[in-house]
Image 1 (cartoon, one colour):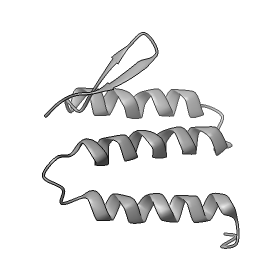
Image 2 (tube, rainbow, N blue to C red):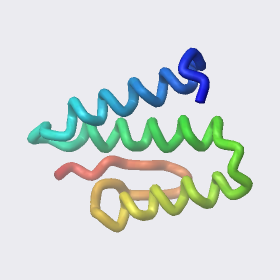
Image 3 (cartoon, one colour):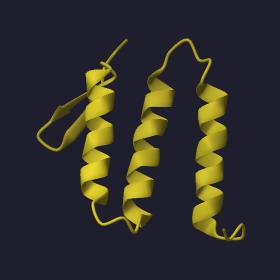
Image 4 (cartoon, rainbow, N blue to C red):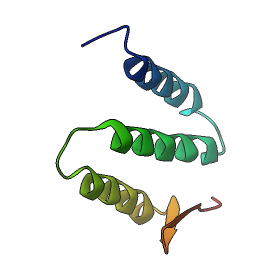
Length: 79
């Protein structure tokens, strides 16, 4: 692991932001952060099926009632 990598630092920042927002009464910031993290990982992953993994993660958020997927758009559900 290259701790001087900008991508590595970005993941650390996303982790810190996630920890910061875990106790928010309104989960929308955490959900938006989750989506940003998923997009970031998909952009830089070397996994062969990264698009499939990304879609599965979005579908899991949709199943939890946190987002709605509609024609290549992601909408955060008002909770």
